[in-house]
Image 1: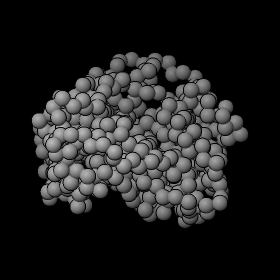
Image 2: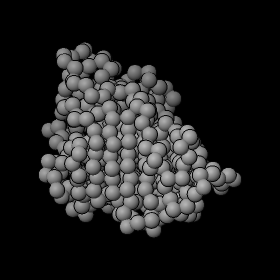
Image 3: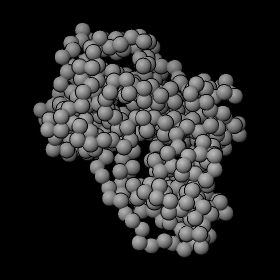
Image 4: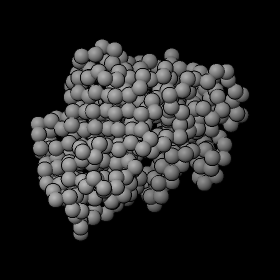
Length: 447
């Protein structure tokens, strides 16, 4: 077990570029035997973190040994501590990792901006990682997560859990079996009403910080700002550029997932966004992003156009949807893949609908059963399964989504992306957003 001088010593030891953590990661990076139990710790125990924790802990082969949350109230650390009453409790994830000698896997269910800063040192310690979507807050962080998982030989899973639902698994199967032929283009959208702040300025003033919230720790790697009741923690951070990734970031890793999985696409070569000019600190209330990807064996051409739309009530132009009848009802969110022999509607979340070339709806389609996204990771850590949203897959998906959020910053400007060099080759100002500044003393350690 590694002993720290204080709760900041671990962070300090990992923030020197190119410097390895003093504890050899290889000590913990083995996959545990299928008959062994998996000991996990959870960082972020409220909201989605609560369902993630319950999902993984539902495995009969998992023990919860650590809980961490900056909020000790009943809806956050309090409820987790009540259910797992004999488990160590922390308000600072750095201290948890300092004392993590018995921890084999870490759940990271924090706001987007803290995913990579927590996951990277966990992997450097050889811990398996289960991380919420989107995998990271920046493209650079996504690339680093992918590299770290490979370097340290750990089992990883991004929590885009709908990937394991029968609906998405069936959609992937239908496409890869050629039911609509080679795919010519894709349209994906989210037409729901986000409940977080959009297109507003930062509120002035500050409010007293509740006694149960460690606001200093919540801000983590972000630049410090005053606390405002209900404006950031526990939910509305999603609409703020410093903490979240907007509508595209929040839903893209779900809705675009069966598109990426089925067609085996990875990095776009260029993209253009249409969106209102951003406010300084919040995300927009509507956007369209047009990507171009290299073609694959599942596409009709050497390139594949993929268009993302988000706005209240939005859906793709009906004249672009191939074999789908004009009077067919589209879901409020999902994708349409237009193929040579038909078009597939993939709702978010319901079973796919396949329209044939004559616009008739196909019947008696094969159905692929669901798997458990949470226990799949737990079992894979024990050598009894393989994950399907490991960081080698989730990293490129997240990068593409986050490149779209960069495009939203520069509406109407085509951005050219070279994935090998990680360069937006034609736009120096856009390239600046591949990474971001970090609060002094909180800089992550790159691989």
